[in-house]
Length: 554
Image (cartoon, rainbow, N blue to C red; front, side):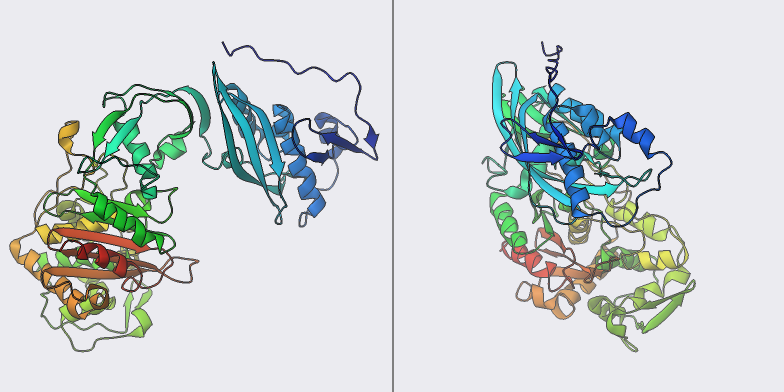
């Protein structure tokens, strides 16, 4: 069933042609459109006629945007896949997805309604029916397309991306309706309560990941659904398949997580007050994840983000310096205003300097050049080894129960190596990674964070190659406690001492007016880290989010 294709009835009389314009009113579409088809010429005739003509250049006119978008939407709605694909700048990629829209996704009665264009961008709404066997449900969503000039001839066409068909599609993804390959799961918090995206919006991607990982083993039965099936690029980005419409419910299995309903609800509230904020809360003694929240719900930045962590990375750098005996917290160590390394000149924030002071003072003030000026005494791989061997970072082997990015500290040389010492250069982290760094300092040993207990599926958690000495742990706690009490973290951490420690960070990003603000800290048997992208200094942006959650630990 479903392999036969209905052939559209041929029009016996052609529409009236007025001055080269065909007026088309789509039956049942709810709107009228005008499509310019070059006086009724075929695509081949237009292509041959274009030969020898000059390539069109210059900004697109409103008429060109309207004509190109109308031509595409009209053809798509009418099921004329070849014509619709020809109206894009990549027909080869467009045709299979547009064909699959009806053949694989089983969508019918498609109505596309354009709205007012903004420049070359044309938003439009989509209404359709998902019909599979004897099941059907409505589907409605908004999308948008952008008109560009085709390189070969300068004609106005649709800039093709899979997201034109549906905003949740990445290039290479497909839409499929049928028996879901993975049964649904009911995710429970640590107390046995049900976790839903409706109550905890940040958990949408987490719940998708849990289903993908445990659906087939948690005892459930698959239902029928329309879903986004990820292609290679999205899989490489560790994105999970996504359900768009559920036609029939399967029987869910059950997966218990380590999430605390109290911490999760509080984390959701805290990040909602900021744009592009993310936070993670851990239990240092075990690695259990108590909360994960993002103010943007389409991508789990807290677990899968890849961002320069700024000065929070100085915790790892300091661990290395202490272990090598290059410095102690109270050792005199200047922080010059400028420092030259391999042709680069590094500046402190606001060109500050500490002429006479201890390393602890520079750590607490987050003075960059007090760290970068150790570069001549280090090997290119020293920071990479420290991150991997003590903090378990950059090994790509964490198994928390859902997809994660486990940090990256590549081997670098020269000025890039110096930049890595302060969390810039090629270093990339997310709040999960940096919460784990604070947790490792607190516990004295790396416990791989996890969302689902390893006993559920017998998986092996990642381990660090070695453990920092008690002396090194004591030194780290000394400088982090000083930062929490007197340094850049003092305002956010006020009243939470004395068993605490923190580090702020600000990471410059090209094209951003404000840096990403980072903050990581521990208190008792809690550790947390957060980032506010383009927010400014970490102590003022991410700091209050993290401190408020640590305060809940009593």
